[in-house]
Length: 129
Image 1 (tube, rainbow, N blue to C red):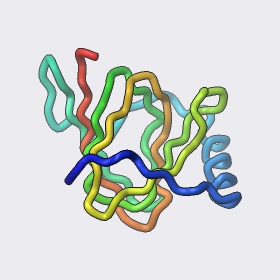
Image 2: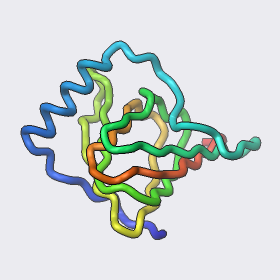
Image 3: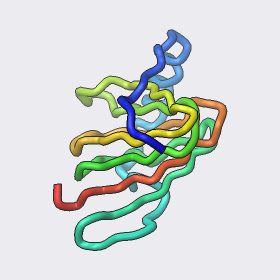
Image 4: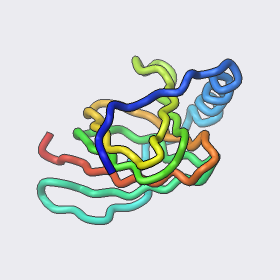
């Protein structure tokens, strides 16, 4: 496991259509949890785990605090904000050995596994930020 700058895949017209279709089909989703379940929590941090099989998506979620994502496996994962959000959809490339990336507070999105491998990460939520 290591830290490196996030890498992004080029979004092809087919992928753009897939991400837009997902966003339209889920436009009325309520905001839910940032990941599957909490592994640990104290006054300073909340540690979540998330696994997404190919084609699976997380809840629509909002990053209320700063986070570190410790990514163990996967190949391609999309971040899809709701329409009207200032961020555009993106597709992140998961390095073979995984990665650790910071995520600043403020974003709202779904994570969608658009790859062929299981996506697995631990999210470390910094509650004081």
